[in-house]
Image (cartoon, rainbow, N blue to C red):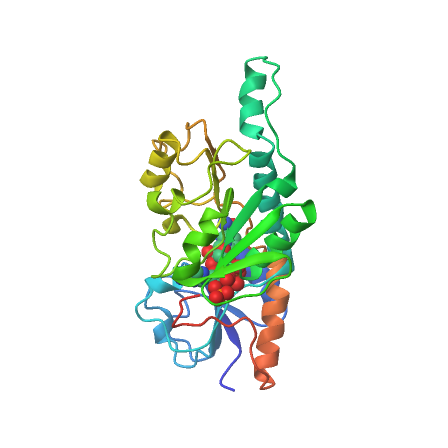
Length: 313
Ligand SMILES: NC(=O)c1ccc[n+]([C@@H]2O[C@H](COP(=O)([O-])OP(=O)(O)OC[C@H]3O[C@@H](n4cnc5c(N)ncnc54)[C@H](OP(=O)(O)O)[C@@H]3O)[C@@H](O)[C@H]2O)c1
């Protein structure tokens, strides 16, 4: 072993808090101070500066500080070492909470009733029972499967779409290009929990939204995106809302973040905006498992939660 320091190369996360939580167990160094430090074998990164990791001669493992790893694609000099990503019950539960909140709000006409309350109007809208509503989840990974289980427990019908064939108890599963249209045709509320990759770039466009089921007891199709902003074409979503293809949308992520002050999404009465807040990485929950993985690696044991670099997630 050449050394034992962890490099923290982070932007947009509280680096000092991460350092405090890690430093009790292993010494920590910061980028750019430790630019070519041979004692660094592990790097914990979030939106790091490109080409800094390739200078570390003894880097063995990269830990993404979040569940998504699309931020790593910005580094053309990413070393060819294993990449571990976040799979954490606390983060997963936050996402499940967000999805259940947004699905039930769209289903129970939350936007309609909030607007009606502002006008002091008393009118009961049609409200089908959950068992008559189909929620379709794009991305049946760690987060998508957990959301599916929670939605099934509430009473919804749940469809799921993934790259490879999946079997999830109670969920009607579709896969690949051939499965996309039947999946969308059977979905009233679409929940996007895909990773952002070359294959999913801009996938949520007008043509995709037009394939959702609109002839339902909800008065139209709804979209919830808590994956990544670049999965969607914002202009297409606005067009779909305005021409009736889409009834409402809950968007946690945007092509440009923070959402610019002049974005039409802010004031659109059929859109609910949250600031990429569905499920944040909490270092209090993440550093322990990361340190445990480093210890396991040092004992020669296999790493868990590895990224498939070819697939990009
Ligand atoms: N908004 C937030 O606060 C927040 C927080 C955390 C994460 N996220 C986002 O949520 C994403 C999902 O996280 P996760 O942990 O559930 O990921 P995951 O476990 O890697 O699951 C990804 C799922 O997407 C599917 N998929 C990937 N590419 C596809 C394609 N081209 N066509 C069809 N399906 C495809 C995968 O299919 P297979 O099953 O066949 O592999 C898998 O089911 C993350 O990548 C991140 O971007 C957002």
